[in-house]
Amino acid sequence: MGLSTYIQFFFQGMTNGGIYSLVALGFGIIYSSTGLLNFAQGEFVMLGGILTYAYHSLLSLPLSLAVILAVFSVGIVAGAMERLTLYPMRHLSVHGRILITLGVTLTIEALVFVIAGTDIFYVPPFTSDEPIKFLGASVLPQTIWILAVGFVVMTGLATFFRFTLMGQAFLACAINRDAARMVGINAEWSSLIAFVIGGVLGGVGGALIAPVSAPSYDMGVGVALKGICAAVIGGIGNPIGAVVGGFILGLIESYSIAFISSGYKDGVALFILILILMLKPSGIFFTRET
Amino acid sequence: MGKNEKIYLSVFVACLLVFPLAVQAKYAMNIMIFIGIDAIMAVGLSLLFGYTGQLSICQGAFMGLGAYTTAILNTKLGLSPWLGLVAAAIVPGLLAYPIGVGVTRVRGFYLAVATLAFAEIITLLLEECRELTMGWQGIPGIANVSLFGFVLNTSQRYYYLVWVIAVLIFIFSRKVVSHRVGRALRALRLNEEAARCLGIEAVSFKVRIFVLSAVYGGIAGALYAHHLTYIAPADFGIWASITPIIIIAVGGERTVWGALVGSFILRMLDESLKIYLGLPELRVLFYALGLLFVLMFLPDGVLGLFSRSKENNKGSFLSQVKESLTDNSRS
Image (tube, rainbow over all chains, first blue to last red; front, side, top):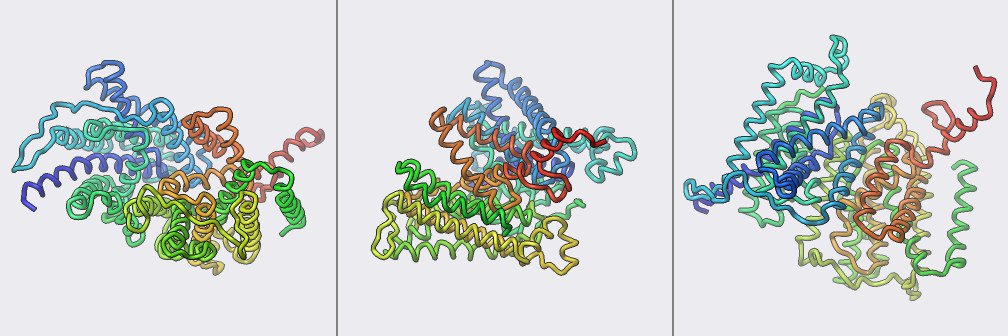
């Protein structure tokens, strides 16, 4: 295989990897804060894409505004999910609440199915459709957007957690909820914030990937599974691990299309997930979960 | 088994025997057959989740493995469906063992994720290994089951096959949980560390129950294959794994009978929705909302309304209502 083909697959992998990183980050933040595995994370991505389509094509808003509104809307959906279904059941066992996230996942998927059917929705690329030539490979401009926006989002999150009071309070709740309460932090808000952030991350990922891979009602579960895979590879709860895990997963997937047939590409990721769960569930990186 | 339980069981079996004589319609028979198959799938999950607290999202995959095992043995090798049934019970069990061992020693949440991944892999393999499984088109022409030359090719006859197997599986499962193993499992669920201190080997019990749930899934799959005589990978996807979860959430995860009650309720609901709503999209939405409703308001399922809750030391919900209505003197 020539160098340019390798590079081609590399960028393909980075494109998907960026999205997986965002999803894995979302999983990690929610898990650190609430101990829950949020199955609905994939639905947030799906909604990000579909709402971008809805705001742009159906309401004729300019694309940039549509994206921002879509992300904002998904954040609201995530917050509503937490307040309406998880907060009232906060005394239920972790397993029970994970099942509730599964219920919400199915509900969102079913709702979109009812409204939109099995259609897939075309979202135009943020800038142009013309691939950029780089060392003989064709790179979509959207890929640059994904990597750039992803970088900005992650830096923004890191800044939020490190330098703002709210971010610090949130981290405190994630590390030890009761201790945080004792110093006067309102721990009930941390779950809500976690879900809203998770929703925003998912929504951003969905809006970014929509021009590349048109969203449909049933893409949520697959995305969630990939995100879980990335989070487990990197170590769930570990933000750097989530990002690295996402890109590793994207690259593994991309190169397995190259070396094995494309039908099996999902299988490779899943197989690696199972291997890691069985051999080293804490992931490649050390996790700081208690 | 308690005395009340034996009475309920006998009444139930009697109804089962009489039902086909009273109701001749093929439609009703078919529904009952599917209820039986659903119930067998759900019992395995109920043992796993209700008694060990482990959530498995791959019952559909085990069902698929069972169905395809018997289908392939039957259509490609011409073997008898009975052999297929036995093989269908064994193959998923064998696969479940390494997965169970590998994953049950970590927290239950990892089991859920691993089983979900496993289910997706199986679906993928079923679609991709075309020489063996004929890909997404599925396998047609699976033979009917025959017993000493008596072919079970009508719904009525198949009904008896399914329910004989189902009742046997239920009684066996009930014995499993009322025995020492059952008490061990319940102890594990309540507090794993304390149970370990008492010498209960967490890992081996969990693995055994996981394998058992896989075996049940395989049996259900074989029964499914020989009933429909045509299977495709789409039958055994995520939805097939989620349905048993909904069933035990609705019916009650605390006892084995919850799987039975849940299967009845779910299938009846499905058929009613089919008749009155028609649109498949709305049906899925109803299921999803129904699951949420049950999880939030009926955490012990329908059977939970009737049973005494040992953990709270209160009566069941209904008996508490009765108490509050009739008791005037409590201060």
